[in-house]
Length: 201
Image 1 (tube, rainbow, N blue to C red):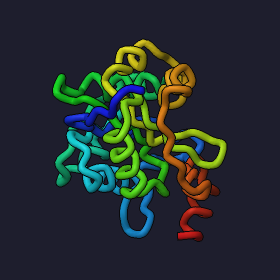
Image 2: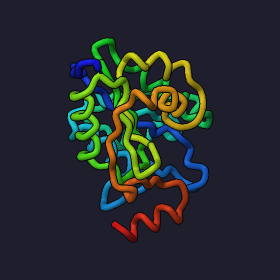
Image 3: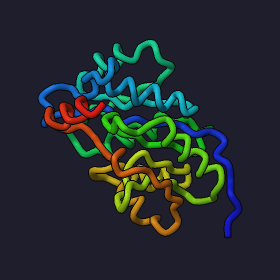
Image 4: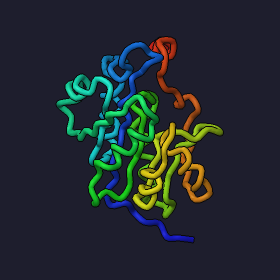
């Protein structure tokens, strides 16, 4: 069995470029408990010690930059933000320097993902040689996902929706899994989703 290896530097990549067509407005700027969704995600990534934290923007990029201007973040722009998720993932990964050994991929609208979940992924990575660490909610695997640099080339070659879904599938037997409550598996795509989330907060 491979010995655990500790990633020297773990980055965060937050995907926040989409046009939010089903929401009818930019969902990243919707406020929950007094904070925009994208700001919540960024603060949790920073709070977990991820460095650097790259926010991938596209739709209304200037508004998102302004919303986050006081936080120590880096930005990557996806000009094809109406295309598949892979475009945003590629932009985020390409922003990372060679000193980054792993990256946690997050969605800006998974508002129930806490700093605790991120810390659990990081701790798991430090205790395993697995090439990826996957959040698992019951029977469902979903972001946040931690990929070591060894998988970056595969992620950059992949195209499609989801956060490197095909790469996760290809390496599922090598992955380390972090189990989290199913209730945390919630994103915000429609006004109804957001209202339900707001009512439950």
